[in-house]
Length: 94
Image 1 (cartoon, rainbow, N blue to C red):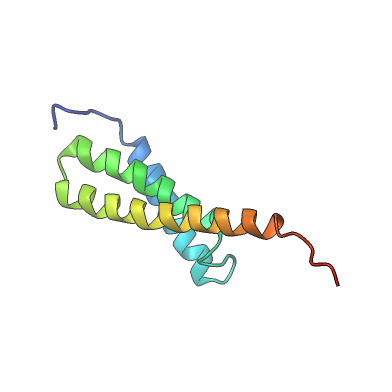
Image 2: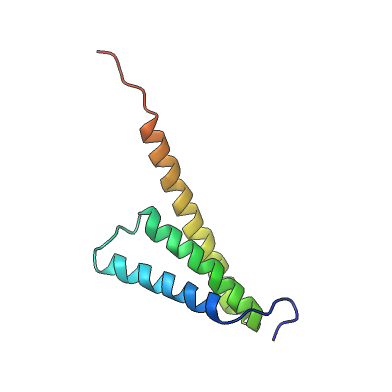
């Protein structure tokens, strides 16, 4: 056990369910891979999996999940910015 952090297994299992559930939803065509729900679930799942990996000293898994968090977080906020930009487009006079 790492001296830095001790967590019960629930966050790790929750993270695993979020990331695996998101992957299953995209694979079955239920959501788009570009959707904020998928990217948000992936990013939150990566945070929880990272905390779980750190608490057990599984450093390769922690590093992989930090990368997953960066990718998912960037995609989430890029999508959010695009949606906000689309809402604020001013009409063009003809």
